[in-house]
Amino acid sequence: MFNFKEELNKIKESGLYRKLLPVLSGSAPKIMVNGKEIIMLASNDYLGFCSHPEIKSKAQDAIEKWGAGSGAARLINGNLTLFDELEKRLAAFKKKEDALVFSTGYMANAGLLSALGTKESIIYSDELNHASIIDGCRLSRAKVKIYPHKDVKTLESFLGQDSGYQNRIIVTDGVFSMDGDLAPVPDLLLLAKKHDATLIIDDAHGTGAIGRSGKGTLEHFEIENSSRTIIMGTMGKAMGSFGAFVAGTKDLKKYLVNKSRSFIFTTALPPSVPAAAIQALNIIEKTPTIISSLKENASFMRKGLGTLGFNTLESETQIMPILIGRPSDTVNMAKELFDEGLFIQAIRPPTVPESSSRLRLTVMATHKKCDLEKALSVLEKTGKKFGII
Ligand SMILES: Cc1ncc(COP(=O)(O)O)c(C=O)c1O
Image (cartoon, rainbow, N blue to C red; front, side, top):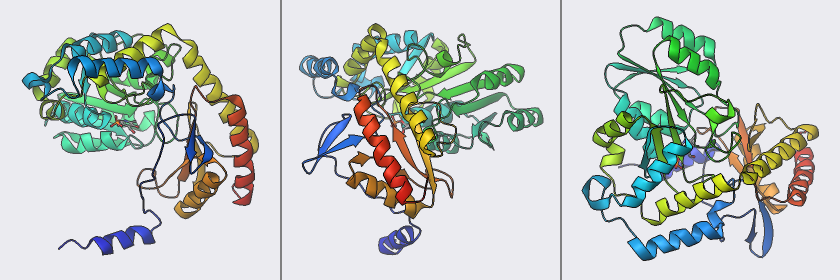
């Protein structure tokens, strides 16, 4: 029989044991824990939309009108017209012909890569891609090659070696989720064109957060849309609710509806989710200042961390790693920061490579400058105590 205790002890001995933290209030820039105010620096709710009154109200209206659940999978009787409306809006937002909503980002990547990754395909995946991309590659029947992080030269040499594959797919996070750096999208797109490949960009952390109007990684690089790109995005991060989507051509959507198992064999999202997502898009489109607030807060924090001497790797976005190294030091520092009033998540292998355990700090558009200043002063004190700066 499986010996859970033994396996758990092994995880504990390696310093990689994880447990769930009780969080007693909804997402906000500051939360109350045991009567104490804690500044939240670990949320993907970048725009503060989880608690936006207009978004909550649209979700509530949808429950009243459509009910708490969708009743079945989209291909059975769960295809509420709300999904159609949302998919049209997402496609327009990402400047694509069409979009297909999935229940989660994990399922979108798994369903997209397994459907496109046929036996005749080869997938090239950045070594720091999100776990859902890695699992999507594993679920596919394609040959998979991992290229070093953002290493366009190695990728080009791989593409040159592999002839005889009908479909070539390059897949990358747009904004890397644990490093906050950006994929070299213009170079990847050039390679995709040269080698007749498809470029899939996971824009989970770019959607609603980067680019002039929050449209994501392609907008950030000012790349005109190309039919070679397929964009995956999530609605559970900057958009404040839940779920995900894949945006591309009309034929891609038709193909996924027929072939993507994580789309076909699962119950459609509850109606409150597409209703909340549509309202999130309305707000992003009518209030561009919210995107600039996020950018201002991110650059204030990144500069502050740099001045204090923290190593934030190559972060360019609202996600900032603070490199620590050993898992135990990282967990201890996160605990101390929590006691001092900051909620910052410790990230260890296998989420990040060995010896690169880190604190992952994220900022929100709704953080006040005074809270970010306070966070920097707590980080300075704790960083010195731990010998990190
Ligand atoms: C880059 C990236 N892709 C995909 C996902 C999965 O998205 P979801 O949380 O909607 O399953 C995440 C979530 O953390 C992510 O960071």
